[in-house]
Image (cartoon, rainbow, N blue to C red; front, side, top):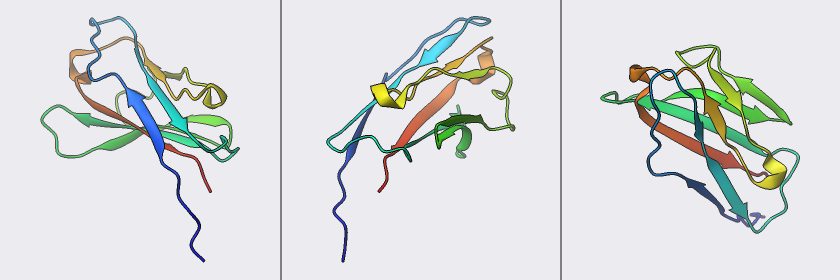
Length: 111
């Protein structure tokens, strides 16, 4: 049989501004009609301005945050979320002009 799928609604700010050298919180909140499972995961992707490629920069799974050890953000990122509060936000410190781009938050709440 096919199990029913319930959508997760994910909310982020359309635009976030920061100044060079400062820190910025990339907000990601979500809503689901289902209970939040222990297997919930949050993945952040980054697409540099002018680039066609998107890279994974952060992953939260099994109750642990994992900062991907590639890319320019690895030493400057921290987990600010709390899935039990339906929050998958991250913080980026020491902003650089090259950080400009598109950040995408993806939330999965299996099954």
